[in-house]
Image 1 (tube, rainbow, N blue to C red):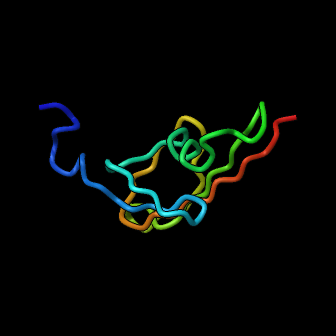
Image 2: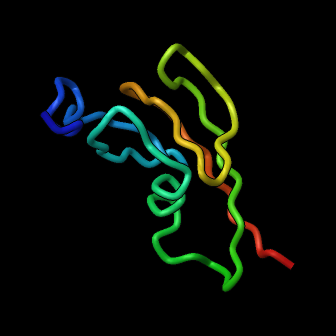
Length: 86
């Protein structure tokens, strides 16, 4: 059995990215996936992102760094800020 075939792996959640509801399939979301939802077209050539989340699985809040992922649940919220790397 493949990971994506395991029970719950294909569950759809509504998460909020910069207050916009987004449908997400799966139990986790990565830094890169969240930033692409927030900014499909990066606003600067050398964009850096800060990702803060709340209401993740286990009622966890925190900061998501590049290369990391977080376990989500229905209603998890992400605030993504873009800055120009100078």
